Length: 136
Image (tube, rainbow, N blue to C red; front, side, top):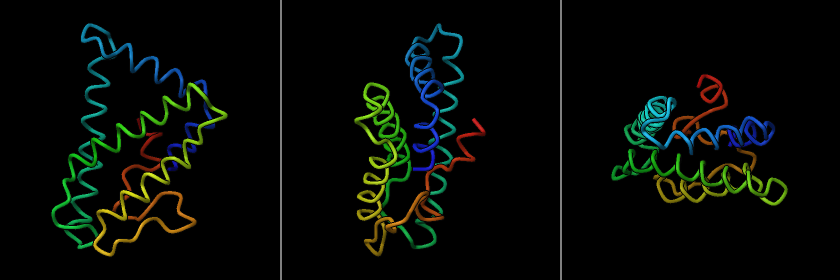
């Protein structure tokens, strides 16, 4: 959610990212390899954090960490695209917060979602933080 807040405050940068990502879908595009690696790294880091939460007993043992990491990236990108089309009608951070709350309720051992005042989610189960995003 921190990343969604950060991106919504930088509309030009966020929209440029979406355009570049779409263009880089062509294997001949100069940025193609960068985005392939970026998404592989994102999934690896996110899945690792989720595996740690499974190992610590916070998440259910049957959690498919890789699939959830891929899903998280897809949901974030999809909400970001919707926001790019309608920045005043789509609250990126609120939609990510709602998604993560539902997700956590389904995969945490306790069945708990996000705390009401959550901005980055549970410490171990968070997928990415603002500092992770700025490192990209």
